[in-house]
Amino acid sequence: MRMPWRRRSAGRFGPLLAAAGIQPGSTDESAEPALSREVAWRTGRRDQVSTADILEVVEDMLGDERDYTFAVSFLEDLQNLTSHGLDTFRSPDEIRALLGPESAVCWDSLTEFWSGVADWCTLTGLPLESSAPLLTVENEELRMLLWSANRTLAGGEKLGLAQAVRYEKAGGSPLPEHSHIALALRRSEQG
Image (cartoon, rainbow, N blue to C red; front, side, top):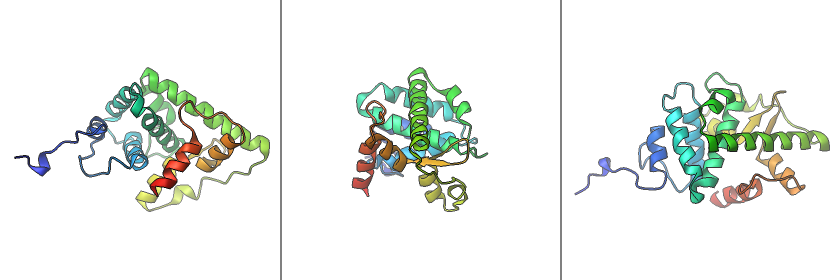
């Protein structure tokens, strides 16, 4: 007889949950965007001792076609979190130094994509808001959602999914196998 408190996740995210210190069954593994945010939040924190272990699991996930989109979404969430320059999180350069070769390519591709979105916003005159109000949110769940879904640019402006979708709809190149239009549709279907 199996004891419920002794079960381990046999799902495809089991190794990732274990590396991140998330108890099996404590999160809904089918809600991939929420899982990505939770793991990115833990990974980026300065006090997380297993950051390198988590990133190693993500490196392995990039080699599996069914996990590729999740892994890229996770790296994007992590990159967004680290873009805000908050003391709680490691810097983008600190994370970049811990990445495996495949993850580093994805990280750099994400950086290029978001630079393209920022350049397009400037070129088209699309006004960007300051990220300052975003960074004052006190509710931890809301912070996790907002900070991982938006990034802060060097000038303090914020970019998010809305700008990425507009960029792609205007003909901007999406990341290979990672369209923000498709991501927005998936998120709206999940509620």
